[in-house]
Image (cartoon, rainbow, N blue to C red):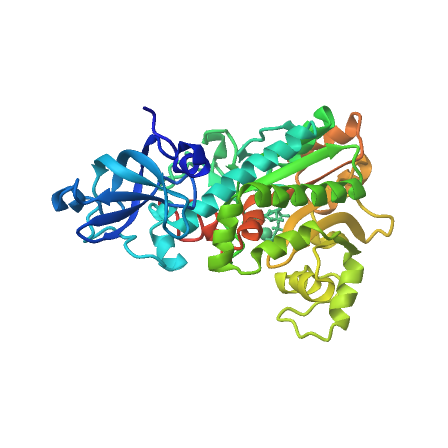
Length: 463
Ligand code: ATP
Ligand code: MN
């Protein structure tokens, strides 16, 4: 007999009366000398399966090893349950303990550990209700993202993780080298001799797959990437990780309006998918962390995103009379407090802010006629601030080249990128969604370190 997942057992009322085999980890055991109840969980659902031990068939010695955290195989008849909050339970006939968990030192004894405590126990926290729920939602969201793009004919493009171009400018990079750091080879001028390094030149982990994504889009039409990115920024915030996953669609023949339409449709699709497929987990997270979670998700689904220029956004902020920690005026980069004011207090809806000053945006964004702004778009969400950053790309060779020169970006690094504008250039657009920012929104968790299994942030690379 092959064992059944607990999620399958709980979903099939016709199994009642039959013998089933289940395997999992003990969440708790309680009872008396006549009957004992074990809550078993195998990670397939937030719900535990109750196992009933009739103590006329088992001894106290049998039961001693069944403690919180131990692992079990149980067979027995599935019976309809009288208990509150469950439809069925297993009447244990026979069981086997795979591994014990000594109550004296198993760290997840009691319910209700703080998230900070669990971050220190990230090797075991997937066994908690909270993290198993978050990780199931994370998995479902990853699938939803592929489903969305594959259904629309986008090609999944794998862009490199090790890169020699430092021109994206999206964030500080982690250097990749095999040179001996304690005795670096030097050139005659005393500089580090990268010719002797593994790739023969300086390399780093990528901060974004966008530039290569554009190479894909200008050949395959519509592509998306979905992979890890790395930023060595010292920002110890609840919204930044040093290693995070990014989704970067890039589309030929899209202008910025098409790009905004896609971003809005995409976010709504992911949220709808979560509501349709992760209901039990979302309800658990709502109950324990964020009472307004479900209504906030539905609110975003049922409202059009506001579309507004940066210039108009700054005007609203200036006229708000609000005292911000960072003063705001035309030309400043918006901080999360500004973004959240627009979204949560002024419009009370997600906002797509467009046409930012060119000085605060990347070189590749399409320049507007006014000579001052570029066709950037940031999608701003309640509780999160920026969730997506994107733009229509500059398709004109001369304008792009001029911007690269103005900013002093070395041409030797950029020749291949400029070739897309030299040969058969097309209008095109794209954006980047931080996967963990989406998960913050969908799960209602407050700290980005709690929506990735093993977070990396300054001074932390445990597990
Ligand atoms: P922020 O201003 O919040 O640092 P950014 O402008 O650096 O964001 P982009 O370079 O546009 O962000 O990256 C695209 C998306 O990647 C962002 O909209 C965000 O969702 C996500 N993102 C950026 N940096 C991080 C990070 N350190 N950790 C997690 N997600 C991030
Ligand atoms: Mn950043």
